[in-house]
Length: 458
Ligand code: NAP
Image: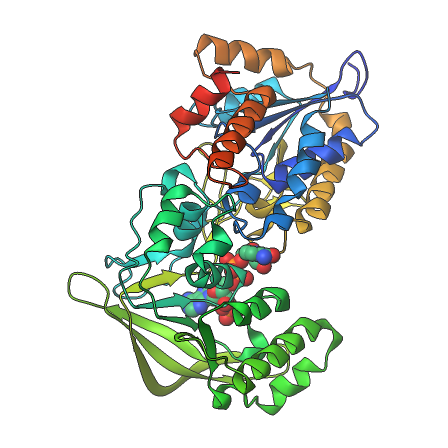
């Protein structure tokens, strides 16, 4: 039997998930030099995953990568199967039988929890839900965020926490022309928030956000940024860490924070940045009203400092709490899962079973493989690594496979309402036309039925 990758027997690969991890894997396959057929399977009728539903609406530049993804999708060797869900429309077993290889790139749309008392209280939300809400993610469209509150606490100091703070504090005119969901624009325009507390459990030198994002917090009209000077008095070990080239971003963060402390601005509303405060419990009678914090101190060697409680505690009254403590992937029916990390277990991109052996023909890329870290572009090298593993295995993937024809037949039998890339382009066009009415770049559909109707109208 011949090895796949030839004209007579193209290498047939399905990729599950059309965010950055999926598109960059497709790109690497298309550039492999082999004859390939790549099918990109997406649960929603619309592509781009995190780029559509994660990137903040006022960061339009970051979304421009969709032009690259569109070019990849328009390669004649690739097909987009939108509105097709693994586990609902096609099983792991069926997909594995149709294709020589399957790359799972389903991302990390779930949220990590704090695991403290009161997390279930009304008024406490995952930051990911708030991000999904303002970005028009269908599952989040009906969540109510109480913006009648005057005080919000955002827990975590990664870039998601910063995005969430910025969107909460942005003047509505800065958002009006973006592709922010209409329901979010409406609710934010009536927000009564006056204080936002951004709470980190480690010190300013360990904050995970990047300088560009942090700096933007100081540019929000009407808001001053308050940082306690005592929090910026670093211990000697942190000062030593900042001199390391690998910590250049952290050093820039600390400079920016010192700038905030020196020039807080004169806005009436206040963004408070707190460091070395770990959430211990969320309190409230019927809904959240306060956050109990443990004051922390750092100890240990440079690069490996741990924060631990000093015994002192602190408290912030707040009616809205958003926990931005990281995303996590979700298990897929029929595939192993590393529940502790929220990822698929793998070796060099090859998904492994419970005994650590690779599952032949199954691969992972993007956040479901390595966890929610890095920026969009990080997924390019990550996906190329996975595709390199797949290509190294090609000789072992020699059974003839039905590929696209098999999937088409199954979906037709199931009467699945598949959206192809032309269907997506029709949705995109309709969203842009809707946006034009309000002078916005786009007015996204937030209901799957509306997306399907726009695709069908094409
Ligand atoms: P992240 O960068 O991992 O930050 C998570 C934050 O939560 C950290 O401050 C972490 O503190 C804190 N945390 C975790 N567990 C906690 C706990 N139990 N109690 C208190 N704090 C806790 O994650 P993210 O913000 O969700 O971002 C995910 C990825 O997307 C990152 O790579 C990020 O850079 C990227 N992203 C990029 C952009 C952009 O480029 N503009 C925008 C959004 C997201 P420790 O540091 O102490 O662990």
